[in-house]
Length: 326
Image (tube, rainbow, N blue to C red; front, side, top):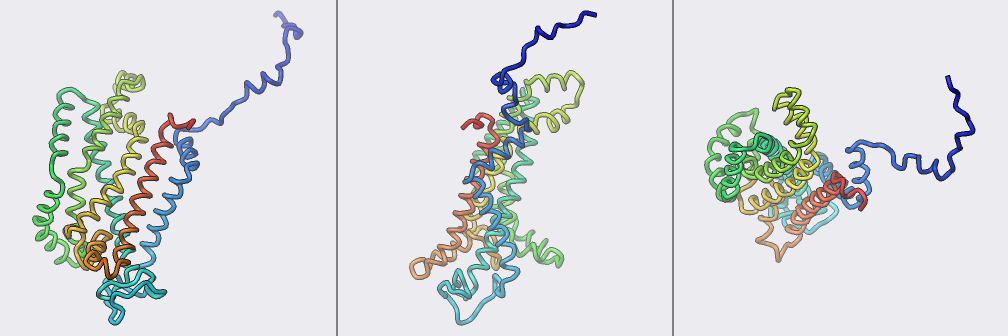
């Protein structure tokens, strides 16, 4: 066996050694996205503010000596004080507790509605984009029809139609009475958002699936005889999850705004339960005499929606590999 002559080899220079070193640690897509998100201070602060509001909305009503529907005689329309930091309304009810209950309801509506929209939109859009052809054409025309439905009209109709059956279901059943206090308007909002607001998610998911289903790994999965359901839910949807998460994050403030708008019109949460929209609606009549009653719930709505939008922008930048060097 021939032995190589060591004189034929030269030691690498320091520059060559430096060029051969790994310039960047190997990380997964989600780890890289998390690192980029942490660098976005605005988005990170927005997430923290949302978390703080969520925690306060849970614990302040629990530990406060005042209930959200408790009437306190002698302190009606009181200005903000140490005892009542947000003041009181026309019946002497503590506005801080009522605003926290309203924030709790708004966050609940935003998260639940976004979850329903994501589930419906992902399933519908992935099936449409994956199978294509005539099925895709029919499903997208259905989406166009649903998108043309006037949302406010449907909410009004559902509020009227659902009032009697919801009252019978919740208020006459002792085990469901606490849920019934939210009123049929809240469930109408859930139903309307689930039925009408998933269309944008379906279109986005369809576009992602169309871009991915021609990739080599999908062709390989088909060649191996992988069932369609497994290809959709194990290969296509996970690879489109970045765009889906961003769209879901944007849907939450949209749902909160819809609830606030409908409650402002008297079509949302039923009294004595409150939401931020109903609080602003009640405060409008006395805005010149007691502006603080409108200021606090309106500011809370604005902060929540703004933080969700900023956090969504941060997630979009973090999950987009093209933003890596920006």
